[in-house]
Length: 387
Image (cartoon, rainbow, N blue to C red; front, side):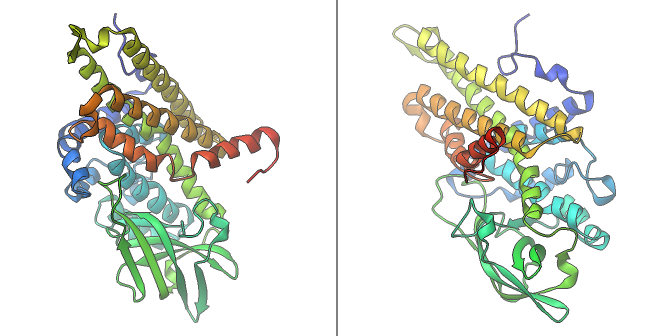
């Protein structure tokens, strides 16, 4: 029996029936609703907001949170498969879901009060309230401890001043989870759209994640009530805990992008005739395609084991760093090589490879650059912090 070209180790057989059903549902959505429009959306630098309602109806926002808060109660592997299938369409769609679920809904669930959970999570799961995550600042993306945004007590309220940079969903968002330095350590606040002194400015001229909204956030003495402070965490472990959740999903997403590129390159190499034979009949081409399949298989097994560890409560941040580093590097290398195999056709967004290659330039950078994750693994091996 022939092996599946994108699943040479039959990883799908290791999934539960529910996990396979989740993957199939999201794959159908990606095939039918995302792929037909995403090339044009990328060209137009437009996030396809018309898909948000459908994404919510499928239960993809906060999918791992308890049902009492609007979540789906899914396990971590199912969430990973959601990320994989969405990014097979486009990194921008997966980024939207990752930010809403892991960076906005998760901190409210993990660090918020019961009143905060009831107030925001059900509407966020339904796509009625969109969130963004305000951690990165203009002067130091890889060094969150160098945070300049501050929050000062003023009676029963807080006054927030500072700025944030490279914020996915910023101009779409109804609320922002903003991390700020206080006299009692770094704390998180839910800043609402329309609060005086709070503004978002969309970042233009992007050559990556063009089908995603990226913004700067500005806070000028924004008055935030105590009821909007996330009280159950202090220090960097709050935002870093959120980033671990998001990075986990990102280990899966690039697998989808790589599969999309391999699928396109395989089809093209079989149909493209050069020197009286298909491109795929050349040994050099087959070696490159085989190398892509090898890398995808390794990444699939890495993320699946990571998901099983996460569901067992045994996942360590270093393991997330290893998978994020490996899988993003895998995907960007495959996307670039597929673009090359497509020849001149590969430079247009009528084909997926160049779009995925450009998007992955962001994915390999955000939630910790490749170098940061290499140093995390190096620190684990040596016991020496080289940051």
